[in-house]
Length: 362
Image (cartoon, rainbow, N blue to C red):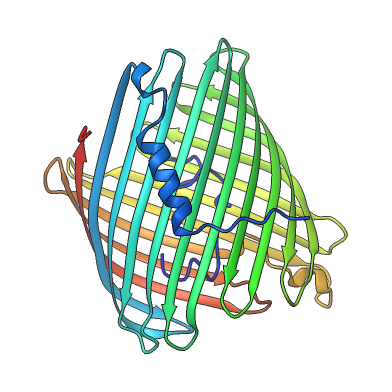
């Protein structure tokens, strides 16, 4: 989305649209350039074990979004956003490989003549060993925005995630997650942010796909900004998540964050609900909210922005014209903190979208 390079974001789950990942974030230095994506696409196209796969499925999606946009910083205007998405998976005897790549551009008619190009790639591999399941995933994102008044702005992101699950029975299981997220923004100066985190959850699964997750998390964030050189932040607290997937899709997650040596606490909420109202008509509501409590308004530590520094709400109504064609109307509002302290970007978008789907094309 527009200005996500100004204020990167992180959801509670493996994100695309919900907390559960249902399609309904010295420090490591990593700069994602176009050549990295070139090498990555070669790797995705020719995995050495492809000859041994038992089944595969590749899907291709292409479409566009267009509508009105209103921003607090850059003014009002129209936008046009074409995109291409390729995803696929390959199954083996006890494991599965998933691949996802996205390419999109943005053309905006604002007073600052903003345009952009977004690249994204993700690889996930999961294997089952008896009662245990191990999954590894890595993703890279590169965004470039051309803004007349601010010249060219680059935003790079790299993520590495590891997850281990032990199933005690068909109902109870235990999960450990570990993640590394590195982000950098380059405009006139370079800002870097690196997060190392882990979370443990006890999972209760019932009636097939419905489940509760009860756990705790701990994460350390390293900030390397010109105005805040090499500062650190420790955040920890309880986490709870609920998923329901029957007559409707419902996903909700909540984290309460304490900060070491800081008067700052926060509430992190992720919510997704979706349902087919009729045979071909669907409705989805997604909301993310971060509410901070500062017990000492004069504390300098409270001025450090984390990856979760944004609020987001969107409503989408879709209609399946055909099996391969989907149209939708979407309303989106975001309020985000950028790297510089005390600065926010608010964005409202009302859009019409058209999506074409093709399956098993390779």
